[in-house]
Length: 550
Image (cartoon, rainbow, N blue to C red; front, top):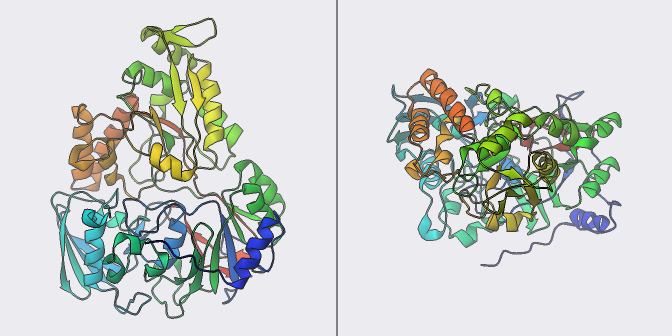
């Protein structure tokens, strides 16, 4: 079914016309932005415009993974069972409380009563069960995949009463409750979930229970959200109940970063997504608000495909790790808001430990490893072995605004130890189809910037055990990795899991399976100072449920 093209309201039409004239935007909301608690008291009313560079390629609500762009929309149209903050702390939301059995294989969720989807149907235990099943199992007959990081140990759920759901797992699953706060775990009306995939891809059919509803959308152009007047079940952690203060949010696609930022500077838009990090200090000096929240998940780095030569040699993988100067990346591409990686997992994820010594920058060590592996420098400085050059192609990640700049710098750094590095850049759609596939035989170094909520889900991507994503092309050929992954995923206590997680991090890094770069700040915001009370969750999405125009 072809997605309908909905004519945007007049305000958006004028905005589009103004953008065609580069930065002379017209008739936008009068406000601009602030991330903290702001000054003065919150007040209702007002419209904001958020300029973004993409909205992904499908609006099917639960289809393997949600685009990092689309998460902005879903975060306002839908709710989650729990709320997770930027330190990984879990607190109630639609699930008011929960219990688990001693070995973390059974969980009971007690739901807030009186919650409804925007079509008036109840968000009750039956609705939660329908969502849990689609997150865990998908529906392959309708072309709907399970959520990639939802626990693969899920067995089934059952309705105890309209406000209680019991959930069963085939093995201990400590990460279940935190993962309910992941940006893929969005609560959608069972009426929507029952639709064919092509009808779910029509955003106007996607019914949530969140503080905003879709007023209109135009594919590849804009999405307009309006406040839901009867909303009254926000996360207690946000200290706000009742409807949102703002009347509407307009997400407008603008590809050029300078146009997005100029629109905010001129007061014609309120938020510009992903400005250049190097410009942040200048924007702050001009009185604008910037935000660089870190999300919970993997650091920015390269997952190495061990099936692709020469990265089937541990010495080459380790040389790659030690040949990258991460301090130079931060000082050249970023600002002091960015932190060096200490593992392949962000340091704000509970249970993560410091393993930076395993991949520290050391050109002498990198050169020694390549010498030992038989790679000899030629007259041009490029190493070769058996008539083949030491070559590497990097594919900048279009979901990360700084990726190309980082890869260009990495290419220079690796050139100093004898690599010949080339870059091949694609747009989001082409990248998704040609590059964004773990184990892709044409991609020796797969750049990862993926979020997750709980470290217990990490094992699900490292091998193909239990239908894992097999990031490194290892299958189950590394029994120690399989053992440690199972220990993390199947731990019955947090203490046991933390001990296994520490060992897992060390093993992955010492084997050179992952090449960390920096701790990830994927979502960068430029906001004008009139927009106050913005909050950020554990996946670094801005919530405008709590925001107001001052």
